[in-house]
Image (tube, rainbow, N blue to C red; front, top):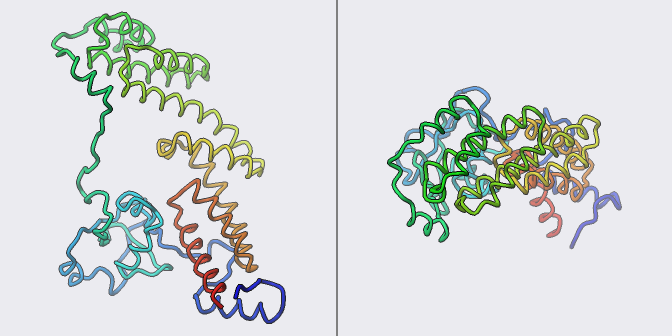
Length: 330
C-alpha cells in the first residue's frame, strides 16, 4: 500500500515511524550533517576499523586514503561508479555518519575493480586511423634549430606557421608535438589577452588541417571545447552571484556534459559549482525535513548530475530511496 505523505494525522504517524526505523532525521542546517567525506586533516582511526587482523586476513587490494579523497571519488576511480561507495562502507565496517582520514587503509572489492591501487592500469587505445598514420611515421633523426629558436623566444604564432610549412609534418611525430605545444601556448596567451576569437580561429583552422593526425586533432578539439565552456562559466558565476542559481546550473551542466573532468582543474567552474550545489543542498534538506521526499530527491539528483562524487548527495539520495521503498511496502 503506497502511503501519501501529509494527508492525515494517521499517515503522518506512519511516515514518522518509518523514518525512525531507517535512522533518518530531517535536518535543514548542513553543518549538522556528518558524511563519510573526511580528510581535511590527518586523524586517528576509529577503534575497531582496519585493524591488523582484518588486513592480514583480507585477500584483495587496499587503498591508502590521500588528502582530498572522498568515498565517492575512490569508488568512481577504482570501481567505476561513485554510487558504489556503499560497498566501501560495508567492506570496511564504516558507518554513514563516520569518516575517513588521511593514511587510512581501505579494502577494495575485487569484483568490478577497474585498476589496482598503486599501478597505472589505464591502457591507451589507438584508432585505426592512428595506427595507419603510425605505420607511415618516419624516424625523427633531424633537429629543427630554427623552430627551437622561435619557441625559446615564445614566438608561438611564428612557430606554428613554420611547422605548417614543413612538407614532412604529417610524417613527423616531433613536428606534430611541437605544433601542439606552440598552439596551446598561443591559446593561453590569447585567453590572457581576452582575445577569444583569435584563439577559436587558430584551433578551428588546425583541426581542419589534413596534415594533423586524428589523435592530435582530438586534443585540439578538446582544447576548443574547453575554451568555449570557459566563456560560459563567466556567465554562470554572474548568475550565481546574483542568486539566479537555476540559470547558473544550466550553464554548468552543459559545460560539464561537453568537457567533463578537465573542468575539475578550473577554479571558476568548481567554485561556481560549489555555490550552486550548496544552495540546492539547503533546499533539498528543507524538503527532507518537511517529509517532501520527491522534491528533496530531485535536488540531490541535480547535484549528482553536476558532481557524481558529491558524498552528501550520495548519502541522502540513498536514504530517501530506502525510505520511499519502505513506505511503498507498508
